[in-house]
Image (cartoon, rainbow, N blue to C red; front, side, top):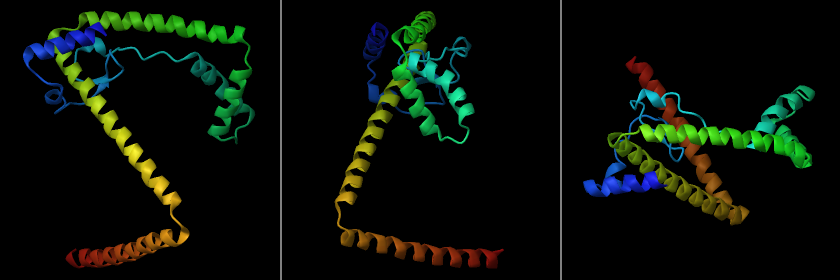
Length: 194
């Protein structure tokens, strides 16, 4: 958190706003801070950037899924996940502790590696990182707004009576017929043109 505050301090000293930094972001790889992304041209020391360790539940799931899949090869993934979740709930605390201890050890090693990488960053490297952080936050906000809008539209559709829905269904059928006719005429025109 202190590093992020220092980045904001650098930005304000330069007189740059967050919105100015959100434009023209490049391609992406993992970033050592808030699990966001940074430009690929960044230093080669980040090429071996560590992944966030799996939680204790994910470790258990990764071990159990192949076993359950071997027992029932025709089972759907959703069924296998449900069975794995049931097994996890039934697992005694003493066995869960093994997975939790492994997670804590990996998390500690991960944090140490993150701190090592952060110490190597220069101020010129921090600015592009802040730019990426801002862009990712904006993208998340847009995605959340889109999801909320879709939920609203879906709710409105479910609340319509069947006679009201029929109007829209008929409009969709008419559009499909129009589209098919336009495609046929376009294909005939393309054949004539060669």
